[in-house]
Length: 189
View 1 (tube, one colour):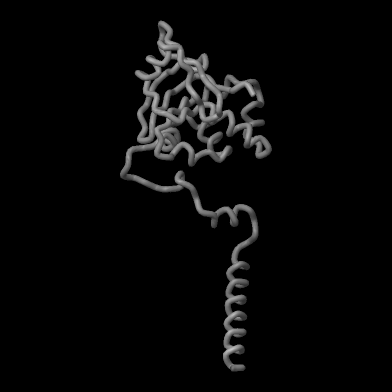
View 2: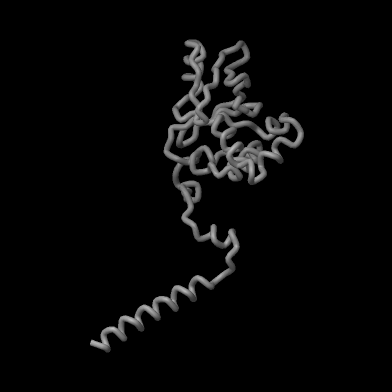
């Protein structure tokens, strides 16, 4: 009987030593800690499927500022889900139109929630190709955005507008649509 308890005690000691040794590997910085956390859908590498919204944005130089904002806000996984999604994607020049220092301020860690709110105001959790947007504009409908806000869709002589900014181009993604726009859609809080 004493041998049994001694065996159990040795087993616990051995397991404890193994856990201690593995926890001492590497340093305890946030970066090394985060490297071991499970990644979301955006971390999945898929070379065979059609590109999703985030993959398309990352592949085009016109969206570098948008991609940095998406990664800083931590909303990458929302843009790679199965959808359908409709993303109104501001080009780099759109961010440059904001008052000086705005982008730098939004990219600070303490403004992550505000940045995420602004970015979700560019995403409609539904399928809105340009043909559907034109129908909605004709009927005077507004689009419900992931931010909880609504954006007006208008058809003017020179094209479709959403939230007062013109849609410059439309791109089909595997999980929805990207409508390229020339302004950042900053929601009223």
